[in-house]
Amino acid sequence: MDWQWENVFRMKVFLETYGCQMNVSDSEVVRAVLAHAGYELSSVIEEAEVVLINTCAIRENAYRKIYGRLDTLRPLRKKMRQEKGRFVVGLLGCMAQNMKEAMFRHPVVNLVVGPDNYRALPDLIDKVSKTGQKKDLKEIDADLSEYETYQGIDPKRFDGVNAWVTVMRGCDNFCTFCVVPYTRGRERSRTLDDILCEVRSLSAQGFRQVTLLGQNVNSYHAEGVSFADLMTAVADVPGIERVRFTSPHPKDFPEPLLEAIAAHPNICKHIHLPLQSGSDRILEMMNRTYTQEEFIRLATKIRRIIPNVSITTDIIVGFPTETEADHKETIHTVKAVEFDNAYIFKYSERKGTIASKKFPDDVPAEVKTTRIVQLFDVQHQISFMKNTSKIGTTLPVLIEGETEKRPGFHMGKSPGNMTVIFPETSHLPGEIISIEITDATTATLLGQSVSSPVLITL
Ligand code: 5AD
Ligand code: SF4
Image (cartoon, rainbow, N blue to C red; front, top):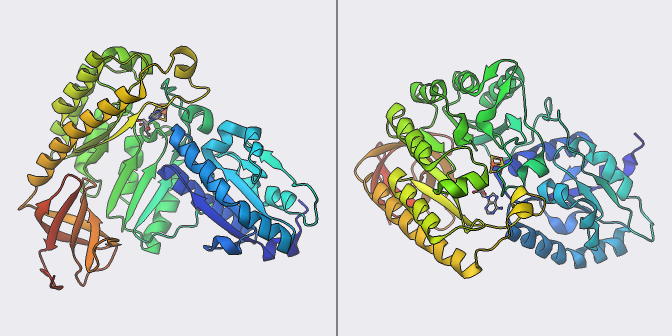
């Protein structure tokens, strides 16, 4: 390794993150790797000689956002190259992995690093940041690994309430619409010991909640330890008051897992259960491995074993060949399960996926729009009904901090992951307090503290 140490110590890095919680968690790994190598992390982009963008590839609009962002970097690049003789723009994450060298077509990009190659970042930045070069130096490292779990790296976190803990990476499911198996590679899990060591240290640092993360988090398995064993062991770590997990697949919910969730008061009673479609024909084309009936049966079983559980979902409208009848099956399933909340997306063809090779993207854009609006409508009614039914009840709320829009108010999360807003109390972020729910919208619950009702007058 021959770094220009004097360069490294002077170089400021600005890191920006797009996309899912895995990227948020990966950015914490990136910060740790860079800080360890002596780079200074800056929150002011104008000061940085290295700008890293951790990207998402899940839908086309994620790409559009990144291209737009790269365009805005042109003036800064010009200025920095004039003043300092160098400027590095590195693309990290799923778009980097998917596009590889093609990203160099954008004139500001000179570094492309995939999600399994972050340990190499200090070396790569060093290579592309040599001063006085007429032409931009370019480097790429986008090799997927079967083993990399970033075990042993202590992620550099900012948030003091919730800590994301990546327990597994990759996906072997190959849902036909999804680019993740290509950008994140094969499934691999960290050892229980390594995860527990991290969770104990998080507890000692004052984190009250951990969210176990993985592209297929409930496929976790390592050295004979199942996901249910892992959840139990994490919930038993002293000081951890809430345990969550995301994102699971419906195929991996054996009864012992549901029973472990039910048995531990500090495991949040919230399950994200991605439906994707309610039509058996479309589910088969998507390679989702369950039928509508099996999905509804699973949701019923979850509600039986875990009383008061909240169930949320992801749905895609306008998958190739989706008919009005298929769409009606999805609406039927949404009504039958009564999800607490749903994230609904228009199908977006992703290059390299099985669907992109086998099924033309033939549902017209206007039809996708009509269907997404219809589903939003159905779900909003259900969410509103579920939320208003909570008025008058008291929920334990983990305070996360101030609300952006309402000065004098705090926001926090219920065990079911609902956002709860209430007038500030003397309690601080990280504390769990009892909030009596007084009002509700489709997306938010409003309430007031039971122990110290309304210190602030409105
Ligand atoms: N088009 C639209 N939505 C998608 N998702 C994944 N791939 C696509 C795609 N090609 C959605 C799925 C998944 C969520 C994270 O993103 O609903 O659960
Ligand atoms: Fe994508 Fe399916 Fe894997 Fe989820 S389970 S990451 S939707 S391929």
